[in-house]
Amino acid sequence: MAGCAGQQDGEEPTDTEPPATTEPSDDDGETPTETDTPTETAGPASDLNVVVTMGNMDSGLDPQDHAETNTNIVVRQGYEPLLNRDREGAIIEGLANEWERLEDGRAARFTLRDGVTFHNGDPLTAEDVAYSIRRIVFEDVGFASPQATDLGAVSEVETGDGEVTVRYDPLNPIPFALFSVNCDIMQQSWVEEHDRDFINQNLNGTGPFQLTSYDAGNEVVFERFPDFWKGAAEVGGVTLNSSTESSTRVNRLLAEESHIVTNVPPQEVARVNNSDVGSIKAVPSTRVIFLFMRYDIEPFSSQQFRQAMNYAVDVESIIENVLSGFGSPSSQPTLPLFTGHNPDLDPYGYDPDQAEQLVEESGQAGAEITLQTPIGRYLKDVEIAQAAAEQINSLSNVTCDVEQRDFGAYVQDLITGNIEDKPPFGLLGWGNGEFDASQTIVPLLTTGTTLTTYENSEIDQLMDQAASTANPDDREDILQEANARLHEQAPWVFMHQQFSVYGVSNAIDWEPRVDEHIDPYRASPN
Image 1 (cartoon, rainbow, N blue to C red):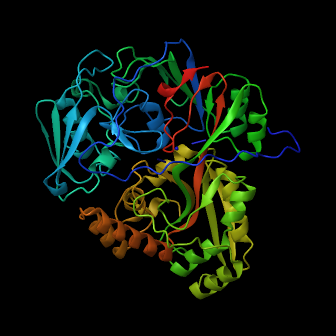
Image 2 (cartoon, rainbow, N blue to C red; image 1 turned 180 degrees about the vertical axis):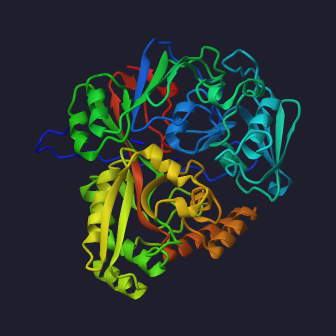
Image 3 (cartoon, rainbow, N blue to C red; image 1 turned 90 degrees about the vertical axis):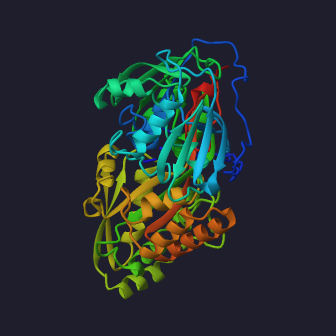
């Protein structure tokens, strides 16, 4: 979902501390706080083609027809949103170079920069931007986009001279946080001239790289777009491919076949750092890893049983022994970087005796459950699932097995509209590039959303209040209360904040971001 993924015998995994990250600004106010303008000068152009190897490939090139990070990484090489984020997560300029809130949060206005062209040479217009928003939000304009709720309750989109005004009903307390992550801008005429199959295999954006070839599920190749508004990339292009096997990704790096590989497992860190061709670069990410439990089916319909599962899993041990320290325990759906994180909540902690007692009290003693997990999508996902299942299985009154799933098929089960068709118990990760609690809680833990496995009227009401509260302090209190309630109700086994661990070739100079986006535009040859 919204991200992806042989040490020699006797070697220690790593003695490298993952770097700390700067907390992003939570300012979603009326004026920009940081710029990233086209006056920025690029270095000398190079023919170097940066090869990126991920754990999984994209699900198509339509930037508005997906809900997972790997696809976003691929399409963002060529498409852009109105606003951007810098490497630490602060909101900066994108296709809009000015933005302001209007009418007490019921409207937001974006002023478009001049001189932006699509890859086919046509200029970007306000009508293109308005159409892109409408295509996501309104089914009669586009289709049932999985991003339909990602821009807030849009009621109307208006265009002016180089401006676009988005109106909301009810108000939207975080329009700029949403538009800095969502709504890649497409050319209206290009979309209307082609069917969805064509759009999913071709690309016409405004971004730094233009599509050269697309081999679905295997490889996507881009070349430098010479007319990019911010200046042409220093590197000649980027190729993205994948392998679910972490050892294969590392081997490609060490064989100098890839320049950036994702989700390097702890046991491979020393092998990379001790090589002559690359090094490890790690950063705490915006992704939380958790074990979801479907609230509508036994034994997970019992809050006591769900709490028992939290006490049964030794998260600290998993972080230490499976992840070699590349993770931080979580106590709630919201990470410390985000608006709405509740600092007063502690992780459940490992207490198998308490777990067994709660299982007895729940009336679910003897439960037989299966934990499903994707393969190679998250850092050590299978190993994490196996460790958690083994700990649960060690309880005297619960049996737990593991089922490994192809990520693509797993996602299709998760995005089905019917909660009764979703897996009852599974490992999942969720990246939140908006740095706001609502963008995790609403899609995953409120009634009627595509991905939810939990429904509770109290949580629904709190999130409705947060959505209609313009005052940031009041809204923060509401979100913290929602996190406190979710901690108690335990719809998930709260696991950890994932660290993004990359292997990076010495042939390039490149630094990772906290939001998991991979931007070879920022790479330069060494």
